[in-house]
Structures are given as C-alpha cells and as structure tokens.
Image (cartoon, rainbow, N blue to C red; front, side, top):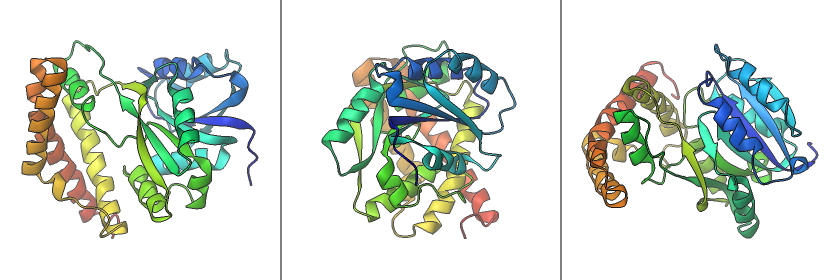
Length: 291
C-alpha cells in the first residue's frame, strides 16, 4: 500500500511530443502550488524523438520530486495505470504532453474536489488558442472550445476511488481507457464532473491526416468498450448523419461565441472525423479486439 506523501501527483503520459512537451512541463512546474506539495511522474511511451531529453533538461532544474518510467510500449491504459500504482499523492492530475495548464489549474481542481467529496474525476475546461496560422488547426480549436469534451489529458482524479475500482484496464491498447474507468466508477457510486474554473489549452493536430488518424484510434478503442460495457455504451450518436448534425449545432455555437467564419467548417471536420472513427471501429472488429 502506497503512503500519501504529497497533496497531488501530476502524471504526464507522453509519446513523441518534442514540439509541445517544453510548454507542457513549464505550465506544470509553474503552478501556484508549493513544490513540496506535489510530485511529477512522467510515463514515456517509447518516444523516438527528443521528448525525454527535453523533459529531463527542464525537470532537473526544478525542486519538484520527479520520477520517470516507461510503459514499455503497452499503450496509454498501461501508462496511466503506472501512475496509479506509483503515485504518492492524495490526488492525481493527468496532463498529456500537448496540454498547457493555466497557472492556477491544479489549485482550482484541488479546491473543487475538496468541495465535492463524491466526485472521483473532474475534467477541466478547454480554452481556444487564438490563432495557429493553420486553417484546420484553428477549426479544431474552435470546435474543442465549445464542446464539453471527455478529455483525460487535463483531469484530476481521486486516488482512493481509482484504487477502489482497480485503476485502468491494461488490456486496452487503443483509446477509451478513460471511458472504461469512468463507467466502473459510476457503477461504484462515484461521480465525474466538469470544473469550468480550471482552464487549459490543448495544442491541435498540425495536419488533418494526424487529426483523422487520432479519430481512427478513438474508434479502435470504442469497439473494445462497446463490447466490454454492452448496454452502457451507445454508438448511435456516432452515426455520420447524426454526428454531422451535431457539428452544425457546434458551428453555430462557436460562431455566436467567437464570430469566426472558420466555425462553419466544423461540420465538415466532424463528418470526416467520424468516418475515420468508423474505420478504426471496423478494423478493431476485424482484429477481434474486444470480442
């Protein structure tokens, strides 16, 4: 049984994030929280670039206790679970390698959890990056800024609740490891919530190809979850016509909030994203992943 030595453990799961990891780590180490109240655990997914080198150069200069591990290529579910097993904090804040936290993000998440003892997981609120000088990256930003995205990459978790349900499923090789965890927590009576006061920004994918590949990965994991939690997971909302219609609503919401004509490209982005989701879902079915 792990001892609780810190108020919070920051779990940073990364893979080939050399373009963004510096900004991510600087946002984490720059939190308005005493260094002795937090620890950082970095889990590397066999990066083939300078991610670890950059991370080491930044963290070695900080007074925050840091440990670095490898998931040995076992995937995101295994990486997140390593944090659960190694954490010495009362709470875990997961931060992906392409996320930037506002300076008071962790403090506001901790305050939220203390006020809501029945909440096991609280996600933060995504804020738009004003411009990326890339049309489709800007469209992604507009899209993610108006939806309540179930995003584990900027989330606080109550470690007591996580260990109660056994943490993450290491068998999940694709995405949806967070969905699986939340379902099991809900079954145990825990709640998950959105904390609108804890704000973060998320670097968009630089190309449509990488964005669509990510959605294919989501679909691959979605197939596993649809079988594991049959009856608790519905995929009807991911049918292309429905998802496109939802994209139309989000484009109107985005335009009313930001007055950017690029908002009207959101339905197109949604349509092709969900078509790639189904490509991943179909591949997963053919591979028997989740059967």
